[in-house]
Image (cartoon, rainbow, N blue to C red; front, side):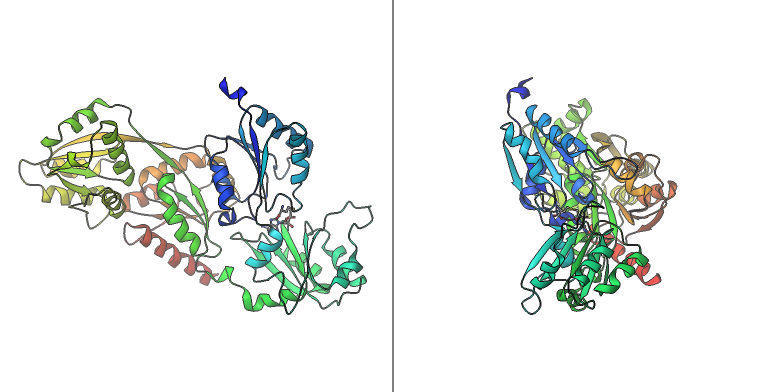
Amino acid sequence: MERTHKTGKVWLVGAGPGDAGLLTLKGAQVLAQAETVVYDRLVGDGVLAMMPSQARLIDVGKEGGHHPVPQEEINRILLREAKEGRRVVRLKGGDPFVFGRGGEELELLAEEGIPFEVVPGITSAVAVPAYNGIPVTHRDFASTLHIITGHSKEEAAPPVHFRALVEGGGTLVFLMGVTALPKIAAGLIDGGMDPQMPAAILERGTTARQRRIVAPLEELPARAREAGIRPPSVIVVGRVCSLEKTFHWAEDRPLAGARVALTRPRELQSAAASRLRELGAEVLELPAIETFLLPDDASLREAMDRLDRYSWLVLTSPSGVRHLFEELGRMRRDVRSFHGMKIAAIGAATARELEARGLLADLVPARYSGDQLGRELAAAMAPGERALLLRAQEPSPDLPLRLKEAGAEFDDIPLYRTIPLQGTGSLLAARLEKGELDYVTFTSASTVEAFVQMAGEAPLDGFTALCIGEKTQEAAGRHGMKTVRSQEATIHSLVDKLVQVHQEKIHSN
Ligand code: SAH
């Protein structure tokens, strides 16, 4: 293979503390090009969902009963992948050089002359306090900042010089300190710190499940124990902790705490994702279905060659529009081919996709459904007119059924195929099993089916399915999901519905 002659390269990339929006632009660019991704436990699911589906994905941070892969083994994996000539991204939580062993991972690469780059990340030491309304420095309170590891081997002398830290008088941030919290508090107090010093422990910061306990230093260990605080958590000690009362913000957003999975073709979902994130939701983008133009299909080719036979062009999904233009391009033709035709689109998103290509839909039914489209189209068609339906390979029967009933003439031609994507399936299943998903959006019955396939054996009753369209809702209901439906067939309306449902849920708790 040619590949073996190419030298690989390793990018050591900081993924940030959890919130996918805190991955840097450079990190995202490098990740999109990766051929191998080596990642561990602290990388947020939102970032994991961005891993390219064709890349080789290597998990070196298994949780629970599994031991994490030893450091030397990780080093060897990076070397092996790079030597195969691959573009390797080593994804690490936070910043790779802040208690991330980034240095150790580069040593072997440097020795072997493998090219590498470091893409810094946003460290939890700063970002987690920020998401909890705690500025790590403030001119009135702290002019130094120490980032300290709270992890020490049981018997060994404490690696931390508590007295010196106390004398410094600045903000102290401890990472990996949950188990050692009692020792840390005692050490600081022994070192001369005021037992009433404001302190905080911040769990799973920047994610939808972030929690914080703020208390005087001497009370913090007991309070953390009562609340069952677990790693990963950041401990902050210093007067800045008192600012949280004024500066908290993350949990005040309308969708704070909502963990939402989006199932749509990957290219179509980013607008919805950014709206949801803006409102404070934690978004998992699941490319539940991938659509493909059917390779050189005879019936499609024939229909496209004889467009003059048709008065109406009917499109039932944004993907359909995209694949139609792909086909057109393949035939070396352009939008003028539709000259004189009227166009029907099933909903607003499909109409927008058309408009982006210079075509305005003549008919968009009042309600997003094949049934409604069929009725309205049949009513709009003059005698002798013929419609061309360009749809997915296994389409729903409602539209042709209505047209037939009304005696309308049409051809129903498969344009593209949708297939469930397995790549992020395991991520999804894990979340479902742990009950770590609150909402899943569905825009078509086929996305429901694809989602169910991806979920495998995982339970489907732990979240609320937010659906666009009745058929979609029916499909979700058939699989035992709790469902709600948006007022209108738009992402906007779906988001409004989600905010409403989530607010109701918060207030009922
Ligand atoms: N390189 C990472 C730190 C790795 S050490 C960084 O720059 O953030 C692992 C420790 O980081 C955890 O024990 C915890 O103290 C902290 N941490 C990482 N992500 C966190 C999160 N989302 N919330 C709270 N603490 C986090």
